[in-house]
Image 1 (tube, rainbow, N blue to C red):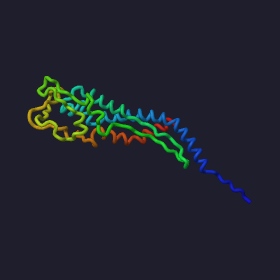
Image 2: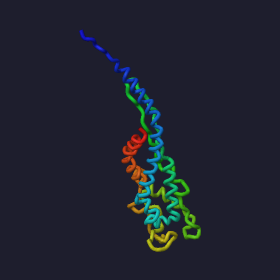
Image 3: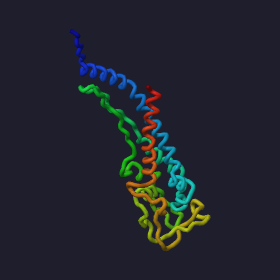
Length: 214
């Protein structure tokens, strides 16, 4: 007569899952720190390469907006976004079924853009010496939210080697709006384009972090 050995696989699975969960709980904080830093790094690289940002710093938009000190303004906005990026871990648990639950949360920019559009760097006040001195130019809100709707109804932009940026001036009459190629709306703009590209890299970033830590 053969003996039959019956294993309590349910209890075994639970013990294995608990041991793995404890190991993960010790390692995941390192993953969290590394991934947060890497995502911030990639966000800055991607957004700085964006055509809209390049145009603001030293191109067509710099002239259209008449934006002085443009690079510093742009960098201040980008730094504000970067500081809002965090990866946080969910608590790792071993379930009664011998499974492991847990994961990560990614916090990024506010979807209504309220974290940046009211910043001083996002609003340019024209010099009082100009004919429209004291005008408030909310250049970031225009780019992120307003699309191509008419913003100025009594002036138009004239590209020439003149004006506060040396790229153009505003002429009487006409209308002005953000150039179509750069116009954004709340759900599709240069920032969302950057985020979409970043999302495409997340799996690679997490895999690299796991390989480094484990």
